[in-house]
Image 1 (cartoon, rainbow, N blue to C red):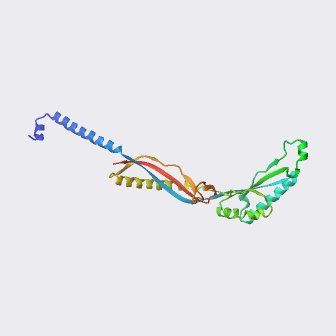
Image 2 (cartoon, rainbow, N blue to C red):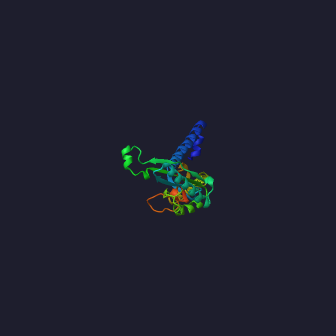
Length: 248
């Protein structure tokens, strides 16, 4: 006897209950399969890199004078400041890009007794240190002039702190963040799709995502042991996004 003929002999209420049970059983089976598939995930990383150019340069030029007469030492320092300002303006900088640093005075014999001072050479008792700070958006000008410091030294200015050179800063990170995050996400999705293809599956929705931190390094590393990002005009911005996808 066919199943449909058997149902004819059952009361209507039992037919409804039976049909509902079959449907409910199918739902639980399907839902169980869905949850099983949903537990299959793949975590991939997407990299985005962009080469940028520094937009601000900060350059400290420090010098000192030594002597036994404090007033004369300060006069010599003032002369050095004038020479430094002229050197910079002659090479293309504006006065508003140049700022004098604070003056520090050191008495080498501070704390000495009168007898000790009498025996000491007073010609180098006082040391006055100062300098200028250049802050400019003309990074190429700063780079070029910083390589001509010998011209200033030949004028008798005792440069004591220029060995590190200028510092170059990139301030435009906020302008490129969104574009780079989109690129990193796109690359992560492409990696996930390739993985799914290799696994005979399909890429599903995103389970979780982590943007990662932006990093700025020198575009051209001078060696493997130091990070010369601050001394580099050309920089590389990098971000890695980590995304977990469902597989279906």
